[in-house]
Image (cartoon, one colour):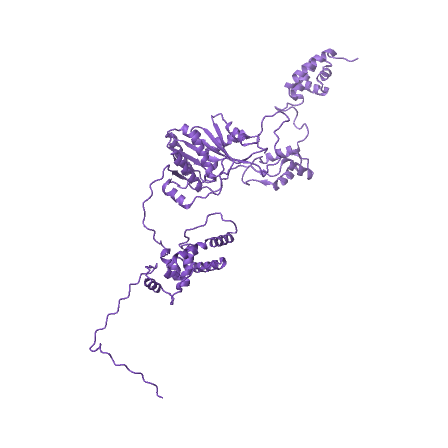
Length: 608
């Protein structure tokens, strides 16, 4: 006969009660609660509660004992459900495990030895695999707990090393901020400009995630290699600092200075002139490299064109090298455009333009985008004469770092007055004019024939010079040819080469004397004459008719000056004083009978 504390039908009611209470109790509370219910039922209560709750009768009996006398099993510490030492031992307590893990981590340890935080190049799963190969039962979670105890931390790389810094880096930042505040106080426009990273059009992967129907992700290419027909767009942004408005010109041609300035011109035409109708100046802040480089000639040339077209004085302030991330357009406009573009491929230029135009922020940023399908060829050179004109009459450099801070006037300044004639300068010899040296008496040729000979040598002379430069450089030319002077020695041109040859052949001048006339070193004259003679022989260029050379060799400047004076040439030889004409000898005083004719004296014949 079985004694029960409750009827079988009432156990279902008790089970429903236990199901409600179970989620709210921890292990110890659940055990004590079941024990109190069993004690309330009396004899047979332990078995009845165990059946209703679906637990072991031992658990219910233990709970009843704890409810009756908590000191019977020992008072448990707060937060514990079991006595200390109960359960499976922790893997960290395995003897020798910690030492084996330290020896393994030492091989891949990184970080400052004096710092409390280090890291390791091994992954947790890699550490667990290597520990298992050594015969230790160490999971990745156990390795993580032990590494945290030793001061290891899971960290990513930090972009904090900026490399070398200019000594006036902070001062330039202060100068830019002061100019911005001055322009904003006067109501003049201030813009921050820069070129965004180039983007490929097509089904290429982009970072980020977007909400899509389950199982329907956007399908893109498995690789990012560009095809030969892939189109690349170049966004160039203009950010209006005062108005918090962005303007992006999306081009499909090269990222050149002409494209950058044209983007600024479009912004002024479509937004700037309407927002600032009374503006007379424009402040442009930009990086120190790229299409808006501080050293770019084309950038300054096109800005001069823009200033002339708009009538604005354009002031430019460049950030120091290596500090482009402080340009406001980077963290006020470009980062939000990247967020708008994320997780969606740019299939066409219109998609890119639409994505930029949809860029807004909670701080009121709005953006406008336009297409620019014009072609901007690369490799356009601005001549030295044009740059000299811009520096003298258009560009005004600031007193503080004029290479970074300068203003471009809308109209050229008056031309400077004629200065004194430039002298030869210290350490640089003068020279005789080519028109004087190109005289038939000095060269033995007609002046027109000598110039035609120099023109005929122009192509082979240029080809030979480029060939020598190519062999000396070991590659193609990256800068235009230098046509000035180096180290105080004058660089002679092609006509001087021909003059040196004819002066040497016709007058038999020494290399030193010919160099004095042409303002060059004797080694330069020797090289010029040999090169010209070699080019004439190689190109088979016939020499025009030449007069026969004089009978005597002119070795000294005095000999040459006397020869030129006799030929009617006013020749001033550099570095020498013009000798005064020798005075005529005074006639001897008349002697008595000097006019009488002396009788002729017959020579004596030899003795036969």
